[in-house]
Image (cartoon, rainbow, N blue to C red; front, side, top):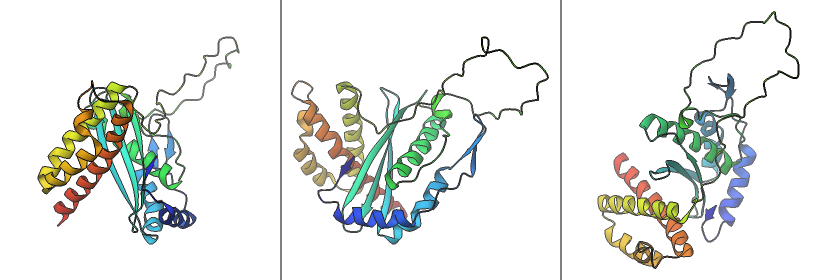
Length: 246
């Protein structure tokens, strides 16, 4: 988890907001498992008003690492004081088709937001992200055959969905790929909003030029650049959103 230098204001506000939050209603159905779960809209409905009342906004920004087919969603809670906390949630997907990526983003946004605000959802709807068709299962008919004996009872198979953890690069190459993609997005976005000079200054502080040279980069430099670029990209995306809404 990343956070601003000070978190006393946002920590207190989040504690008050959590005391006002209700459980997320399980109003969606997973057709693969035949169980209900709290979808993204339910999570948002459960936390939006309490967070807003306490001066906390939510920013969720997705990205994808083509090399490892990893979709990453960064969730940031920003307080009116300027303090913030953020975390990443990532998962590998079966392919990078729009429907697959969209399913993964929704899945990660739901779990990422729930984890950041302290709401516990049940089950999952990540079937498409794992390459599993979301087809409804027909109701089972009552069997008239005797129950199978313990010796031939098939063992239950583990669920194919892997519970994602907050994303950490699996290797230096993975980290370098994330930094490169973030840097490309930062450059393109800064050009759109007229922040080229600002980006140049910020990139100099992060040592981006050194990180882009594998022979000179270190794990510490790459890690610093990755975290810094995530903050930069989040600011640029927010500015782009504001410009579109204006």
